[in-house]
Length: 176
Image: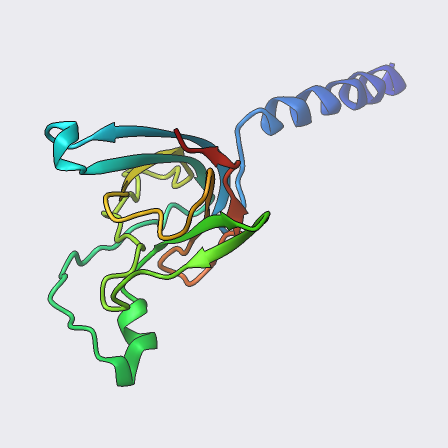
């Protein structure tokens, strides 16, 4: 009889493990996946204010994505540029296809990078895991800089603990 109980418990343990594994667990380091890009115009198309809405999927196991302090009063001090960049958490890099190769195009003014400051997304409660989509506009009015038929973007997400996601690359985005 005793061996039957042990076998029964041993048979139940894998079921308990499976049940526990169904609750999603994510790494504390953010993870990103490319989703899509869509073009739209701000106002009328004659104003040439074209925007690309960029959508990425993200996960973060400890939920510390975004800024608790949304103070944007920091000024760009080129002698302390690294400190200036610390306020950003979604880093965006823009590329144009030139002579068959993608070439990074820096912003026209380094004090206005393509990067974003996300609001505090930390969930309330004990489960701090985060997952969702971020859609951010990219003002495309002054681009492309080169004759090109394709562009792409690269992204890195940095959480408040300083954990950085892997750098992901969008698919090639064809231009009309």
